[in-house]
Image 1 (tube, one colour):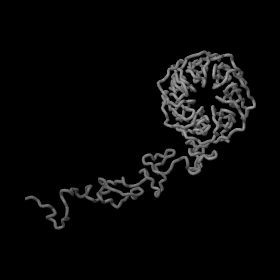
Image 2 (cartoon, helix red, strand yellow):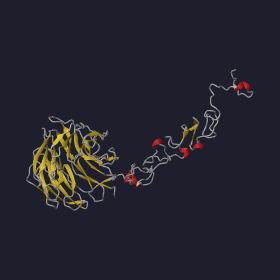
Image 3 (cartoon, rainbow, N blue to C red):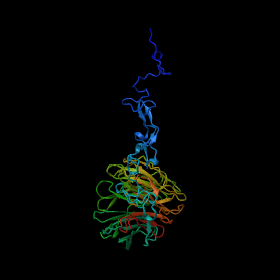
Length: 501
């Protein structure tokens, strides 16, 4: 005979028990009784809650007889529980790195905590509400905000096309070499402790558009290659800071830029020029040095209207390549409207092959190379300008193989004319001081501060509204920070950095 269910035989049978669905045997998970190694069972939490198992709060659950804490709140859940003392909570990113959240949901060292943490390159830290950068104080990146004061020194009053800072006389300070407009030639100022009592003029061809300084003749002094609106010339240093013009007459183009570098690997400094404008296409030129400062024409490089050239190893193969800033395409007539900048790669023997890159179209006026994003290769800061309408300056980031892509920023809408790179705020990266023309521009110069990754912000420093044609950075007063010389139409200006004052 078939056995009867136990509930029919026992007077104490629990009504509602279903042998089909309630299959857990006594002592097993699912019987709603906490047994053995079980933390919980069903709705039976054994008297526990989120707080008792180490969380701030929330709803404790049970899953397969183990606690389900997914609805409990705690450090690391991505929600700041300020009533529990959390100062931050970045979830899985609570690794305690600089400017981040620690595993205990407290703030690690960060800019704004009021403590100067030199291990993270902080120069200062006045606290969250005090790092404003005003009046040369601590900026919001915990570096000293640079300020500049206009020097009372009266400098050249001609039109200054170019300026270079270099130690001409061997006394450890920086002297000035200026390229001047019609009738000016090259003017030299000898620095004596931050003043310039000695000055002289040389050069038989004007306008002088560019000056490049380096040891050209093997005699240890710093010599000068002069780019002109006509033939170029060379001046040799007698060792005391006096430059004397040589008889060489090199080329007959309108030269806008001159750069020095050993392009052919024979250990002396050669010359690369950027030539352009003047109503006809003019070939950019390589001039090869024989080691004694005598130059012969090398390779001609296209016929674009070039305004500037930078010389450096762009692709990491240990020879010198070229980055050209270009104003207009070959054959262009009328007002230039812009053209792509170009890169030429060195074959190792001083021969250059143009890459296929076409970088921008903004009527570029100047380029400077430097490691802007701190990845070990050289990037490009390009200044653009167009009369009547400003054009944004651009930053081009190098991938290490000489291939450039934009950093995505459009910097200003001024009519740029020149740029100098240097660590103006002493935070370990390269900043950019750009000078602009007055036509269509309300800002004569802008200092762009680098955040260390190749992104730039306007410092807001006022350098006046008068137009600038040339700029150079260097420590002119010997106080350990970078000062600025701005060449103008009219009286040039020296701006002294007060960062270390």
